[in-house]
Length: 161
Image 1: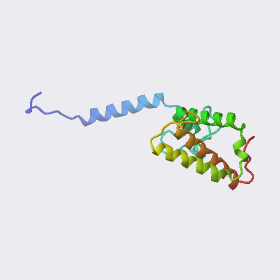
Image 2: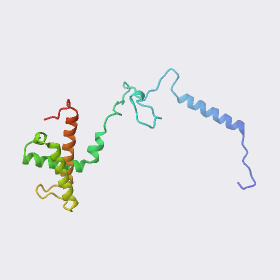
Image 3: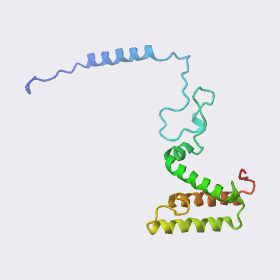
Image 4: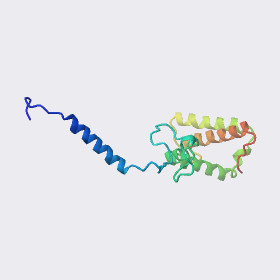
C-alpha cells in the first residue's frame, strides 16, 4: 500500500464485528443466576481487607492485618542464624533464658549492644571471646532489650520461660 491509497473504513462492518464479539463473550460468561466468587477483589490494588474477603470461599485467609513474619525469617535467615549462635553462646556461658532475670537488664543489654557497636566501629568484626560477629551480638542485645520493653509496657504480656 502506498501513500496515495487510503484505507476505507466501513462503519457497518465495524459495528457488526463488535456485536459478534460481544455475543461470543456472553456465551462464555457465567449465566445471570450463577455467581462467580473469588476470595478477594481482583481489581483492588491495595491491601486485601476483611471487608473484601468472603471467609467461606476456598483460598480465603483473613490475615492482611497481621505481621508478615516470613519476610523477617526468610529475608534475614543468615543474620538470624548468627543471632541464634549468640543466644546459644550465652546460654552455654550462663543458663538457658537466664537473660530474662538479670537486674537492670534493659540498661545492661543496651550497654552491651553499644560495646559491640564500638568494637565493630574500630574495625573488629568478630568478638574475640565468642568468635561470633559483633553485629550478631548487637542484634541479640537489641532483641533482648525490645523483648523486655514489650514485657514492661504490657504487664499482661508474659515472656515464655
